[in-house]
Length: 302
Image 1 (cartoon, rainbow, N blue to C red):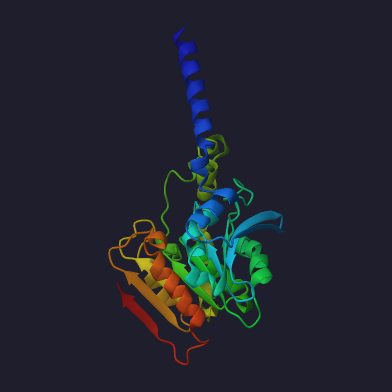
Image 2 (cartoon, rainbow, N blue to C red):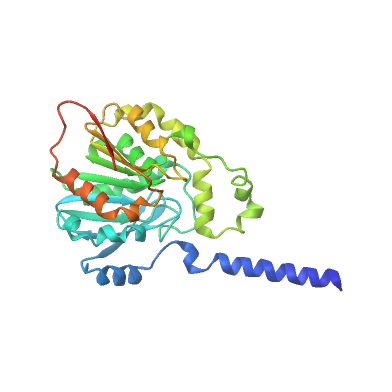
C-alpha cells in the first residue's frame, strides 16, 4: 500500500509540474490583443503585427511608427519576447522618427514557441528578412539588443553590414571569457529532464549552452563592425558582468564612433529601468551624421 501511495503522489507531482510548466505567465509573452491593449493604454494606437517564414522558421513581430523612415529593430534577451519592448513602441518621440519593430526571437513568443535555435548566425539570418522588408534606402537602420540580443545584433552587423547603420547593445553578453557555465545547465538539456522546464526556460537553456562557443567564433569579426555602436552597461549587473563593456572597448576598434555608457549601481534590467535614457540615445543616433572623421571611444559615467 505504501508503494502504491508513493507512486500516486509521484504521478500527481509530475502532472502538477507539467501543468505548471504550461501556465501562460511562464511563457514570457503577450498575445497580440494584450499588446494592443497595453499600447493603447499608453496612447499608442498605431500598432500592427506580422509573421514571415525564414529558413524553415516562422518569425512573429510587432511594429509601430513611421513607415518609409528610419528602421529601429529591437531584439530581446533570453527568455523573453517582443512584448519586452512595449515601452519603446509606445514612445512617440521615437516612433514619429522611425518605424520601430520588436521581434520574437526563434523559439520565443509566437516564433515557433518552444523550438530552440542554438546558432547566433542562424538567428541572424532568420531576422535578416525583417530588416530587408522594412529598411528604407537612404535612411538609417539601428539594431537594439538586450542581453542575449546584444551578441545577436552584433552578429547581424558582422554578417550583413550593408543593412546596418548602428548598434545599441544594452547589457549585452558578448565576451566569451565572461560567459558563466552552470553545472546544472547541461543535465537539464538531457531529453529525460527537459520536460521539467517550462518551454521558455528550456529554449533559453538550449541557446545559452553553446553561447560561449558561439561568441568565440565571432572573435575574428568584431573588427569588421565599422558602424556607430553604443554600449550601455550597469556596473552592478549580476547576470552580465560589467567587464563585457571592457570587451567592447577592446574589440570594436573600427566602430566610428564607439560610445560606452557605464551606469553606476545599475543592474541587468536597465532596458526597463532606464527606458527614457536608452530611447533618447536611439533618437540621437538617428539624428547623428554618418561616419565620424576620427575614432574616439567616449566613456560616460552615470
